Length: 175
Image: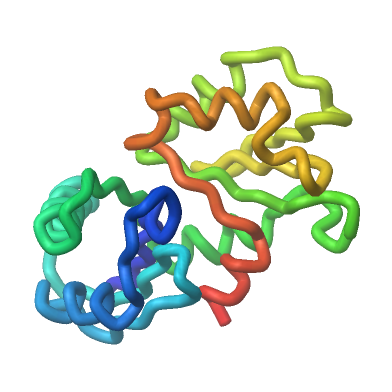
């Protein structure tokens, strides 16, 4: 069995409402085991014994989400081990109350590389660090939509390719 986490992008914001119970039911109807949702921000933990590759699994889930909830569904799939590593390797002070500890997930490593190279960042404004398949970001609280990096990842180009989670949310997923 492989333990996966589906990180949905853009649910329960901007008019796209996906109730946790309905989300869990959908994943169970797809034949997944051990399904549980964490918080209302689109985090689904599930298991599969199928030999289906990540890309095919992602497409199948996105199609089911789109059909069931009538929206353009985008997800990033990570294994349990990948999520554990992303949390454990957070390079900034996660206890700094002045900052927001974010982990940016992408559908491909090349997207992380592109984001890093896209802009010159001020490390005080947009502290960034590349991780194994993720990008860590640690902006000052209250600036997560205003900084140059925030504006970059908010572009339409990155909507189907990325999603971000607060480190505390990821810790709850691993709970």
